[in-house]
Amino acid sequence: MVDGQSEFSEVAEGFAKFAEDAVFVAHNAPFDMEFLRRLEGFGHPVLCTARLSAALFDHTGAHTLEALAARLGIEIDDTVRHTAIGDALITAKVFQLMIPLLQARGVKSLGDAIALQGGPL
Image 1: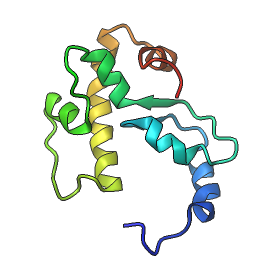
Image 2 (image 1 turned 90 degrees about the horizontal axis):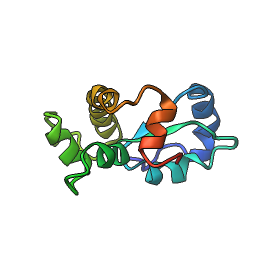
Image 3 (image 1 turned 45 degrees about the vertical axis):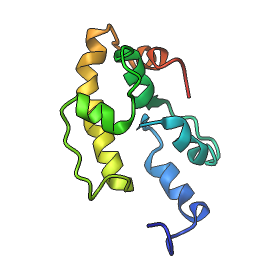
Image 4 (image 1 turned 60 degrees about the horizontal axis):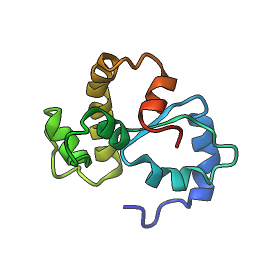
């Protein structure tokens, strides 16, 4: 999918401007952060749905995106799984459904969520 596309260095500045005030939400965020930390001055807060899943559902070892989506009743279209947009949309749905669960656990702020996931990433 990335074959023939722009190099990261060519799009990094535009992406940084686009996302300048964003909170990043990703599944297995430490993997994605390896790339994003290449952006000069990257200091965005990051939430990891895999780590939040482990905090919310510690009774199970299944914290993959598929397992979390199934637990939350989200159907995954196999044609978009493991694509950038498909995984981003699934992660967004997962996070939306996690918000009330986080609130029920007493999470009232971004700082609370970061603490629950084990600290900043």
